[in-house]
Image (tube, rainbow, N blue to C red):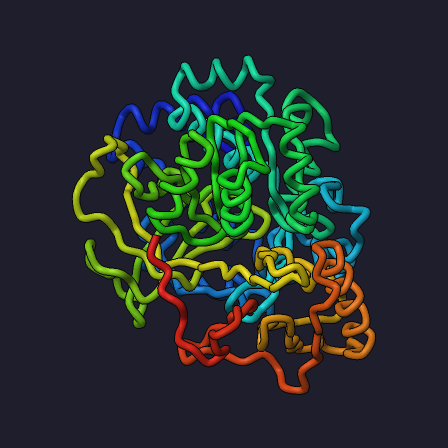
Length: 471
């Protein structure tokens, strides 16, 4: 199927058809789409044209492709993208303007930024095909999670979705939300964003007034809201809660389900492939392998046997044609289920040792405590110009130490003044004006595993081994 024929309606029908026909039909689609993406990348990307020199004309087996990673691709940005009008300089300038969040870069694309545990900031350009595939896959997941009766109940309640997102930056979730709202239509009227930077009492009041049917957001923020629901300050009754972005335990999901009386499902994904997988009632993540390739591999990038956790995982996004991610090292450890999942899905099932969020908890002057999501801190740095990498460590109950690596050519003192102003505002807004913020002389510290923990709670060292991240 040519991409110009892949309307939203066609995508929805094809996803349903593939799952109905089973694993063989899904893998046929994967092979064909991988071959098409590789051919497109070779034809339109100078970087891939050179990287794939000598490969067969048609590539259906991802193992034939060289491995890529964020550092290398970002270092070849202008040759990597397939649209010659897209340059790193132009995209970086666009991403630096908060007034452009959700608007179309070059009249075509959504821009998203990240900074991850690898220590390198990501600058992403997402085309309409990618956005449409993601929308179709989440729609399919919602139907499977809620069932026909749940869809009717959600519709009768206005279908209100609450998105707990980091605002003020070009993050994929907020940029996508802003695009939908800005461009209007029925979907835009059903969505409302709630900032993770909002002080908890105001966030609780806003959700109580909105009464969402579905809550989607960062895991750490949802866990904080679960405590508010248990305490009786938050009193909403959503049908579905979808934590994402940080790893959860079964204990976490059970606690959320009890507190809200809701179905809880999760997602394992990344900005490089936002639709990568969704969870089932059995607690496994099912890979949308008709539109993505996921390869658990060892340190030498050889396949890891099913039933064993991998050293890392390679992902190929089969939808985004402007910025192809092919055999991209995502950095997480996953286990592929060796037998069919009891839920009945024909999609491959995995467990993940992924990215764990660390909530910071501070004492208050009245003897209580206030907890803040790591995203509330991290996104402040992400949207501050002049910072390549950051690390914030709680070294005492009411003391934070901030390590920064300035971007090339940036004024570190100016970046620090901006960071200090934003952190002071965040802390004061949550009744934590007494918390001290220190500027460190040393740069961010790596763990023995080579990653950067961007937020480190009290009692944990920046040199501690990478935290276990079992779901």
